[in-house]
Image (tube, rainbow, N blue to C red; front, side, top):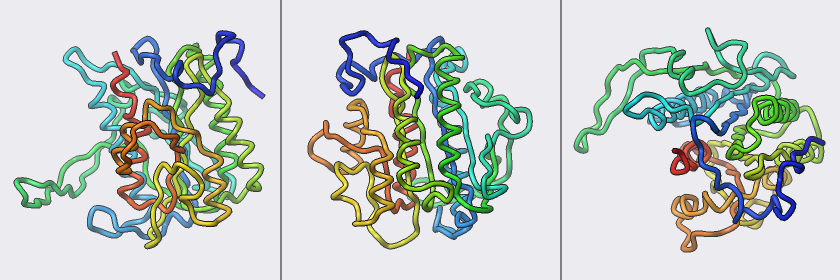
Length: 309
């Protein structure tokens, strides 16, 4: 199994984040964000998103494209863009029962990790109805909005192969791209169902491999989100498995997810309404509606912004 333990000082325990997850994110030492997107046929189910019913796949696509635009905005300073992040997006189950592929389009096609500068320069645009709130009055306008990939919903759910691809991409990013001292990468996996290509135990093993990858500043953070349009209670960043239903899939997703570093705790506790700031949250959402999914993506992509320089 891949390990970078030889890069860690001998007196450091990679599970103690009081000494970890502190690395300042700079243009010379960026961090990475990897999206894994379920594109299986069930993602064609409908969900209420921005006051209209669209497919899961379209809602997730819109959210992530919006997150990319937000990252560009956060990295844009008076002198130009600061490349604090490198991004990759992988879809699974879209074009075949076993397909796992990087989703960049046009001039980005064939690339793995891209910088924020590349992200901005290669944006595509489409006309879309946008609803804005002006002094309490909702106004609908047709605007050109940026996008980088399009929605697909096709076949089964080869999540196991997607985890294997994530492991490969992350190892390459840390070792071949010389990011051994970077703030640890974040992986955000969004799915609406169980994997189709491996057992629960096999998926957990693959998740543990991902979470075992680390820089000198800590382990990769793996966030898993199960989206749903049911009326069942949504669970976001649970403190224990007791917050979840007595369901094998829910508990498997819990075990597959990372313990959240304390750097994220205050924002998570605010979202959840917890009184204490520093609790041991798990990086997952279960039966997530649109608002819960937005909060998970927001934490995963911008939770470390104040570490930038």
